[in-house]
Image (cartoon, rainbow, N blue to C red; front, side):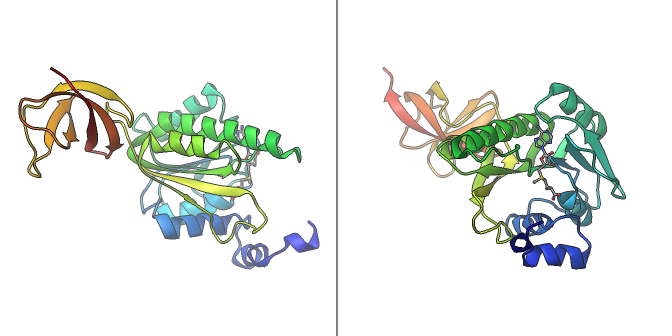
Length: 257
Ligand SMILES: C[S@@+](CC[C@H](N)C(=O)[O-])C[C@H]1O[C@@H](n2cnc3c(N)ncnc32)[C@H](O)[C@@H]1O
């Protein structure tokens, strides 16, 4: 390793016995966003050599599963899967370990092999993170949390929106332990949404009830959607603006006869 890559986190990991300096990124992400709590089942995608697995196990003490193309040398109490996170077979293996109930948390620090060509590397990174999101959608419990590494570039905002569509709260975060010259940033999605409505969905509804705040309240597949600026009996076309775990907010885009 080149001398200038041995920064304070490299030495700290050596001193404190973690497998990689990346461990401190997860400590910092978790310190800020409270992703993993005691007892959680955690799946780590792209986990070798295992620095994040050590931290996840230390914080949760629960079931922790690490997945990587490379073999991960054993960590006490951690299960590992050797496989490609873009393959359905790997997702089936993960579900076989965590059970059909799913995981509380999915974390992903996977990185593609870098070519040095910025736009090619960005496109490969977005492909991989999109696979991680697809995997998280199959294995997360409702209200579960997700963290994924992304290399910044022109497709970043679109990917951030894709995460936003599936989680009640979404933030991007750069831990101090990321190298200052690095293009990496982490997206944190909290409270995985399994509701039947999504941001941007449109519906035609009749307002038959008002909520306590005076907003219209309609049920869509048994999910409550609040609509501002309506009265009892109004028939309107609405567009969903924001989705929370137990309800959503929508605005009127057209008044119907
Ligand atoms: C930066 S390392 C992860 C470091 C880890 N978080 C730690 O703390 O030790 C990125 C890992 O992603 C893995 N990876 C890249 N593409 C993958 C894929 N398609 N499926 C599984 N793992 C992948 C690589 O093999 C590599 O081990």
